[in-house]
Every structure is written in C-alpha cells, then in structure tokens.
Length: 248
Image (cartoon, rainbow, N blue to C red):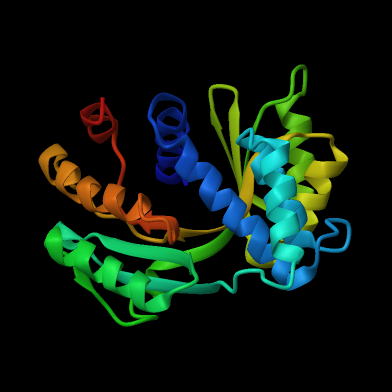
C-alpha cells in the first residue's frame, strides 16, 4: 500500500500547484450527475451521490456547481453517460487500467487508443489486465486533532479496515470491497472529514523503473488523465523516493 500512498501524495501536491483544478471539478461533477441519474437526487437514499458529494467537499467544489449538476442530472434532458474501462501496457511493461465516464464511446476509445499508440503503449482487451489489480475501498483524510492513533486503528480495524498508512498527518485506509459501506459509516460516525473515498484499483504486484523510464511512462499517464472522459488511471509502478524526486 505504501506505493499507492505515495501516488496519492503526488496527486494532492499536483492538485494544489498546477492548473488542473478545473479538470478535477469536471470529473467530480460528472460523477455527481451519474449518481443522480442512477439513484435520484436525494443523498440520504443514494449512497453513491452521498459519496460523490463528500469527495466534492474534500476538493472544495463550489456549492453552486454541485446544485447545478444535480439539477441538470434530474431533468428530462439529462445526458446519458456510459461507464467503461480500458486496459493496456505503457512502455517498459507498465500495466495501466483506465476508468472512463463518457457520452460518446466511439470518441473515447479512439482517443485512448491514440494516446497508447503515440507513447509506445498497446491497448489490450477488456479484462486482460484486471487480475493485476485488486478492487479495494480507499479512504484518505487528515488525522483529526488530538485523536489517539491507537484508538483510531482499533475502531477502523473493527469496522473492516485492512491497512492504515500514515504520511505526516495524512491517513490512507484500505479495506476489502465488501467492507466499504460499513467502514464508511464508521468513519462518518467518528466525525472524521474525509478528503476522498471510493473503490480504487490497487496493483497486487509492482514493477521497477529507472527515472528516465518513469518519465516516459508519466507522459502517457498525464495525457490520459487530461482527457475529459477519463475519471481514473491506475498503474503498477513501484514508486521509490528516487522516482518521486525525479518529478520535482
């Protein structure tokens, strides 16, 4: 899990320092719209919407954007989105798992294929790389002031947490997919404000790269993440301190 925690740290820093804030908001709004379309506009009876709103709050998504997204998705002319995944290899044998939400699957697959081709990757068949990633629940939040970490861990483990990782005052908690709902309720009951939560694909094996190789793979990951139809990109790179320093 430590590699995933390092990757989360990179994304937190990038979110603050670069110009991708609008991309983050766009992905959050799309998830809100999909949640409303599938389960209705009431977060009390729609767990997916409640989670999307929680993640929006964690990223400081303006309330007017949230209200507008819910209203739009509740209307008769709401956009129909399809959720699809793509799997393939980047250069140097790095596995990539891409999650998309799109209103035009032809456009999306054409774009994703072009990115892989441009950066010496190869797009595979659906399901071909799924065995390389575990679908786990992941929660990230700041350690609440004055909270005893031993007490925190006992509560979370009792609710289904498998791993708890600390990065300064930031906490990453993982659990089996089937324990996600129970752990979410426990964290809410403890009045912990979550930065981000959801089901993520965590690699069960990782691959080492040199800094030069890492940079070449990151070019592909970055361009995929910039696509408006892409929600998440997962990889199996073994993130070392040397690789993290190469991003500076």
